[in-house]
Every structure is written in C-alpha cells, then in structure tokens.
Length: 173
Image (tube, rainbow, N blue to C red; front, side, top):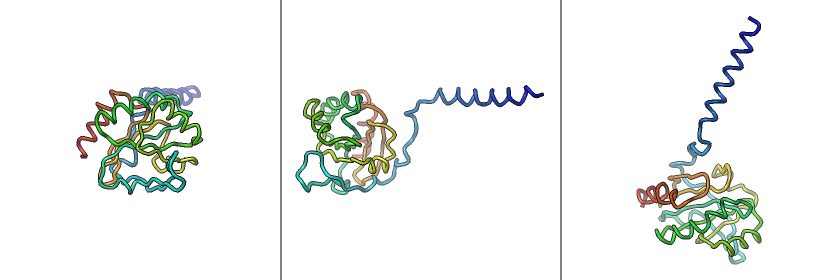
C-alpha cells in the first residue's frame, strides 16, 4: 500500500505532462478577441518630436498591428514578408516596437525594410502587457470598430498572411 499512493501520484503527473506536451503553445485564444483594442498613446518611432500614435486615429479602418523588436530574430525574418504582402493586398500594417532601443529598431528597418505605416514605441512594454503579449512577434487584426478580431503568435509567413490574416480582413471589411 505504501507504494500504491506514490505510484498513483506519479502516473497522474505523467499523464498531465504528456497531455500538456501534445498541445500547441500557439493554440490558445486571446482574451482580447472580440474586445476593443486597448487604448494607448505612444510616440512614433523616427517620427517628429511630438508625433504620437493612438488606435483611435484609425477608427473606421481595418488595420493590422504587428508587435516586433530588433532583438527578435523571427521579427527580422517577417519584415520583408509583411512589406510584400501588405503592398500586394493593400492592407495597412502598423507596428508596436516592444521593449526595444529606438536606434536599433530604426537601424533594422533601414536594413530589412519598413513594412509599417507607423510604428509606435512601447519602450517599457506596458502596452504590450495590455495586449497580452507572450513573445514577439505577434500580429493582430483590428476591425473598423476598433475590435480585435484575430491574433497570430509567431512570425507572419506568406502562408499565414494568405490563409489566416487575409480571410479575417476580408470578413471584417
């Protein structure tokens, strides 16, 4: 009997761990889905001294928000794809530069290309926390009413853009 209880506990933990390992860590819903985009007012990367970006300025438009950083290797890889796809499909992509140094972020955009209409600077990560960012890159589709309609964790590829992001944009336009 003294071996039965520890064995049962071990087997229970092993089953829970095994089930957890089978789940895709990117396959969880955002608490923001179908909710208003968090309010923020941030400075613009490489903008004029007092230039600011707020989601309220895009009210009435469908747009994509891509959270990125220069220290993020997958972010570097997705920049050219975002630029190409947004041009091809005429979709406005805005950036949220997350916990980054503005000089390094600007340098990356000069080298890799800048897909963003505007990129806001979230130096302390507060806005990212409001969005529930787990890791960069993350991408959101926001509808004309300012509601978050889709969230993608991880880099945007041409397939992700055409098979996941664009269908959502088409339904909310």
